[in-house]
Length: 427
Image: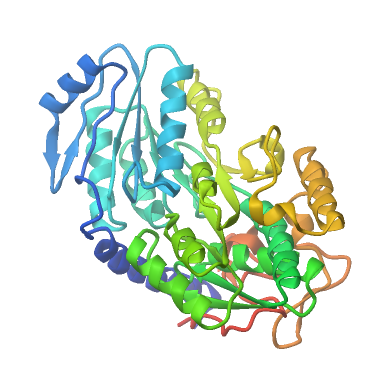
């Protein structure tokens, strides 16, 4: 099989698995109603709800005339306390910072055919800008974008763009994962338990990238620490996340970090007097068992894009922001924050190293490519990035050999040497 065909096959299989599992996960009783509407005023909201037209199982909101209309597709509830809520608040930020702007969203949209249907329905309604907030929406968004060349479509994560009206957007959360790994290693060292766990969602390059960044940081503060991985094959399912956390703690982990959407793992950690590192939404740091939280602040990024689309100065393409954007957070270390309970008694040299590295990141002097600079060895002893070399964007985004025209040299199909897990199988 040729490299190109093999890549297409890999991506196709992964996307099919993602669609099937996510469709099941989003049907849980914890989900909200299948569609919610949002408008600039209560009166607009009522009018939008009354005029909403069904698209399959979704209620598709109407645009507001003489406004700049922005829509968003969410894979979970808008108030999930995690990924979807961080995007929803970014959407509301647009509304509050751009006059005469109307925003709306559709939530609990499964990846695959359901997503394509919802995206196309929003485009037909006449929204000028549509954000789709999941890797699994990438192909659906690309398809619909070709049908509506006058509408801007921005998919969050992924690697595809037509460089016209369809682009991808993501941020270097690997920066924060790297720093969180330092904290986790120091916490495990202090608690005299070198076992750390990772709740991984789907076997896509993003999840390997974030796990490896964490492991590289952990090695800076705890040479003997080992990281075990548990795949859950869902982005949002509090029950499954709870079970996976409990299983990792039962297997001996002292600290667990999650790549999924909810703060449910923190409740398990608190009950077992262990530590968890929560993800996506800043308020999940409030649980005392949360060692730290890695959070997104999408508002300023989204508003910049929306303004650029409105005045036609923004061209959708490959848009990947680093920590110097101010849109990534590490609880306890951002301006005005105090150390969390779990951070406060860590060695002062570790805290200072995290502070210094974060300062470099915020100043643009330490980027995602510095996180993945050689020498890096995998857990078979093989050198995956030689000394003096750094991974590039195509390496961070893709399994080997990469997509046609976006081939990767090192690629993201390896586990760092301190990770005790096998790689997910590829076709």
